[in-house]
Amino acid sequence: MFRNFFEKRALKMVGSLNKYLQAKHGVQTYFDRCQLDEAIDKLKFPVKHIAYVYARYLNEAAFNALDAHLRKGMTYEIAHEKVVSAILGRAAEFEVTTPKMKSRNMDLPGEITGGDI
Image 1: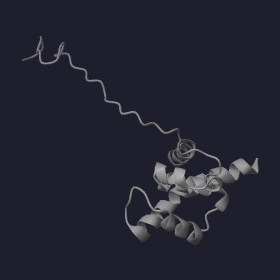
Image 2: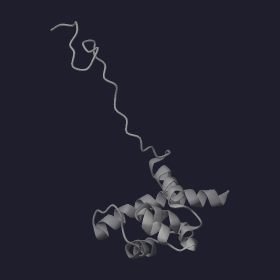
Image 3: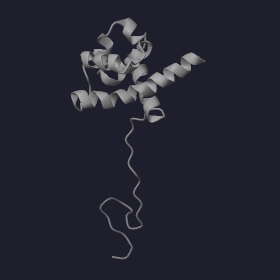
Image 4: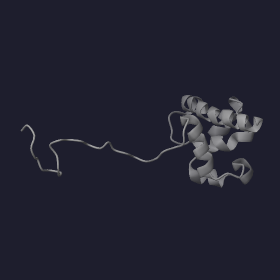
């Protein structure tokens, strides 16, 4: 019961590291391991859940290069999905959708039919 609570709390804390990292190192898509370790120490992030920090702020190749004990036996995809879900509050959706266009004057693309023209 408490394990799940502490994991969820750690997952939410991962997002709060972003503000510190950006203030210290500027806006970046990914950070290096030294920068992350410094932030983890400074903000006293729970070491037990460190894999989530690495999944969020390292690229996939750097995450996979970590020792297995730092990854806590997780793949990049699983750890990253948990972080994104916790930060956004829902499962990550990477689909791009476009709204459907409705027009009473368009039957076929490029063809004008009927209407008030």
